[in-house]
Image (tube, rainbow, N blue to C red):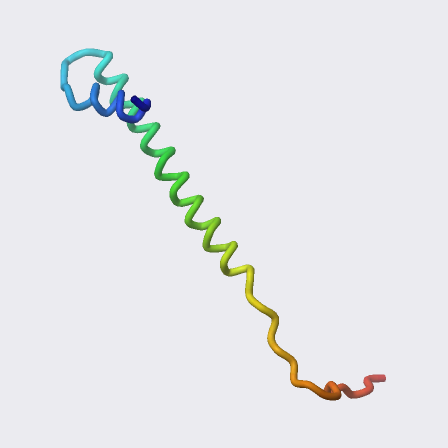
Length: 69
């Protein structure tokens, strides 16, 4: 059983105890870290796919250059 499942189960069984409140806080922290990691991974994948763009194809032949003094 993962920590997320453990504290989710404790949180679902309501009681008027400090242990229940502690379980709610811990579950919220674990859940917020999972959401943060998911957003981070989505952005990382997005930037990696955006960075790789093949270079534009050049026309064969002499390049169009002019002398600048």
